[in-house]
Image: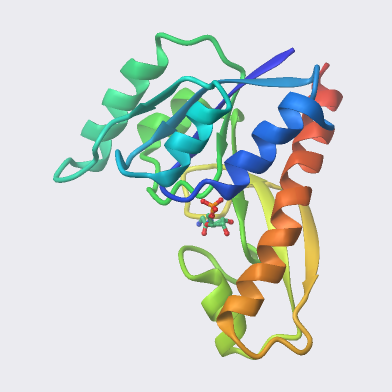
Length: 191
Ligand code: GAR
C-alpha cells in the first residue's frame, strides 16, 4: 500500500475526496494517508481529516522565510514513512530545498492548464477571459511555480457559466473525481 501525506491550506475538499476514495473507493487498498499537514492552523480541512481518523499537523508559516519554514516541515515529515506528498489546495510555494529533498514525489492539482496559467486565481482567470472550457492539471512539482511535468489533464465545460461561483462549482466537481483517478493511475503504474 502506498503511503501518502496530504498538504492543505484551507477548505480541503480535494483532500476529502482523496480520503473518501482511500477509505471506501477507488484508492482502497492502494493508498493510505499517514498525515494531513497544513501551513494554516485554522484550515477547515484539518477537522475534516480528523473526522476521517487521520493524523493531522500544522506549522504556522507566518513571518517565516520560505526555506526556514520548509526546513521545519522537513523535520516534521522525518517522523513519518511515506512515498508521496499530495498537494491539495496547498497555497504556499515550496522552496528549492523542499522540492529537491522529495524530488519526483510531490504531486499537485492546478485548476487550469499549467501551460496557460500558473499560480493563484485560476478560476477567476477562466471566468474573466470568458473561456468556454478550462483544463484541470495534475502534475509533478518541480522548482518552478506550476511548471512541473504534466501527469494528466481533464477538460471542464464552462459553457453557460454566468458567475465565478458556477465556474468554481463545475471545476471542483471535476477535480474531486479526477484527482483520485489520476493518483490511482500513478500509484498502480508504480507497483
Ligand atoms: C482547488 O481548486 C485547487 O485546485 C486549487 O485550490 C483549490 C483548493 O480547494 N489549488 C490551487 O490553486 C493551487 N495553485 P480545496 O481546499 O477545497 O481542495
